[in-house]
Image 1 (cartoon, helix red, strand yellow):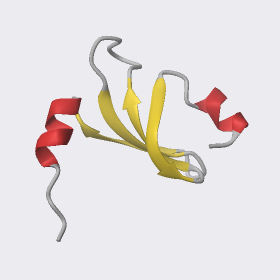
Image 2: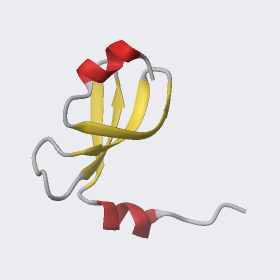
Image 3: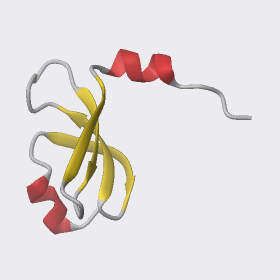
Length: 64
């Protein structure tokens, strides 16, 4: 992650990504429970993927 990206990620905690795209814990609307949000800083787009971490875990599948 680039240093200048940190300023653009206020309230977001990245846990995966590559370059200007990140999967983040999103605490902007609720400081107690994070949503899972995908952001693309270059395209200035974001998508809420899951309402909370539990739903994210439930959606994981084994890739074989």
